[in-house]
Image 1 (cartoon, rainbow, N blue to C red):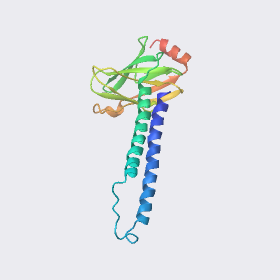
Image 2 (tube, rainbow, N blue to C red):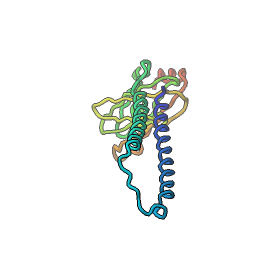
Image 3 (spheres, rainbow, N blue to C red):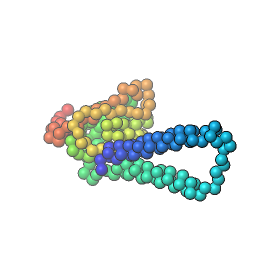
Image 4 (cartoon, rainbow, N blue to C red):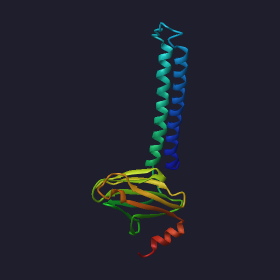
Length: 197
């Protein structure tokens, strides 16, 4: 599964259950306010030791929480399970730009170009302070830490230009640490990759 689909599925699953629970609890609360108001029940009833009710309100939320965990975990595994044929690009953060190094040694600054239809693994590190690379269109957010290589991957499944941000405050010009991800047809990518700077 494309990792974007997994993240979106987890979001909609959790949001869907949350909305259903919100509506259900609100409806039950309104019914109880009307049905058990003081004018109809001046002496409140004391309900204790209802085993069936206690089992229901323990088991159902537990099942809901476990299914949410499962969907989220599957989404996380999708983000970590990089296809074997992925193109690897070294990503180095520095105050206040992104440096991309390709397998053939080509280097670019603040512009990453990748071919359409390929999986792309980003090996992310920092040359100075803590940064965090985010490509919202592909649900990627990964820290760039000096002396440590982290990674993320995405499926380059649609041609276009996408924003790449630093989402960890890294200094006074943090807001200007922006790059562009360009997804181009494979032939155009090969021509670009082999072209002299």
